Length: 496
Image (cartoon, rainbow, N blue to C red; front, side, top):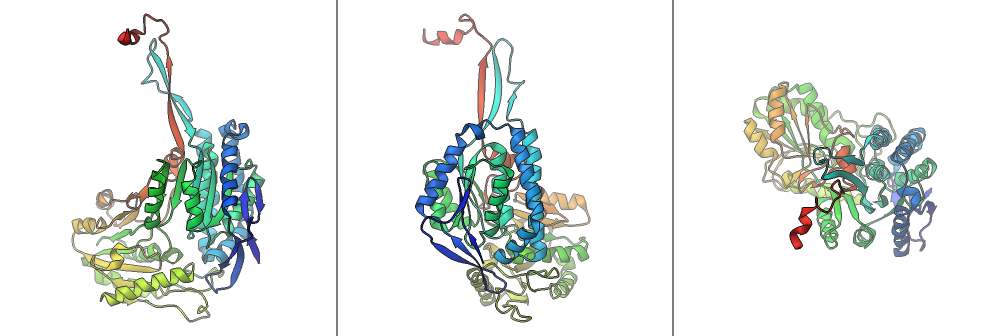
């Protein structure tokens, strides 16, 4: 059994109080690790370590090409240790083998891309359009915001840590990252990678914990920026707390993403993609396509294929490579999803498939829920509320305008998709969907070179891409006078 400790000031160490909680394998309920919970003293030391590192000559003066080299080394070390990362991610988060392997690959790829972006980013550039000879030279200079507090969720543990730490190393900021107490293992394994990659001590500090630990970081006077990924409910509270000191905040929050199937879609692809959209990681993805909108002309044919294919999704032990659907992350999350399922039944929605715990094939000790589909309307609770489980609501629509109106009937705007053989038709609808990412004939895939984030109550700001770098930078206007005679500075005469 492993112990997950704290990473503070370049050292992996136990909690000062010795307080620990259990981390459980969601697939069988067995103990995976003992997790050290930081004390207030530990958290304070982490923040001060990050503050000292931010103002240290070693980090502030480090050339961007050197930071780029460190990012690339992190990527290479993750690849070298991928077997260990995959095994830990499976046990700790309930990821299937295939999902865990993809997450580790994507995390390594993200650091590699961040390395390239960092090497080529213009941290200082003269604006030739704003510059005028004999008057002034004007330069944009991007500088790191400072010490950051970063809070990540339990669904994609390593990948979320990568998304947060990558920009820290790219920009010259420092951080205290808090992993989710349910899934802390791979974040601490990443700490070992950072040490071996040559990240200076204090630049990145990693702890775990819950709301108490998160609130300490968000409210700390030495924190300049907060970056949070998680539910909209908690995001609202974090934004309120950050507002007290007008702290910069990036929030990647909930979603209730529409997945639109037009009547000219390739149904063999669209059906499988619709299942992938809401069943990937048992529906525990913020972009999950949980509102499935199908045009009436193909509805019956689509549903026939859908029912056939959903029955073929293989539930099984997470470590087996053939398993397509694993458990949800915890008993708490299991109960939450089942409550939504039962509520939807009580509301009279037609159950198409599933709707209960999976108890066969030795899965009864884990938090497995059968893939579940309902026919719903906007009157149903699950039309509006994020479930974070393997549950989809299916709705028939008539016209393209109906589809657009239904898609935008949500407080969320994180993602969406349109399926059609007619690219122009799909693109027209995609442009009308109020969401930060919209796929055409695709789902869930992200490009690290492009921005990711939400409209409406799905968040504030963007991660990834150049936008994700700039989210950790302040921009300074440097004005250098090119008018250096008293006679030429006639504006000074305004007070004389």
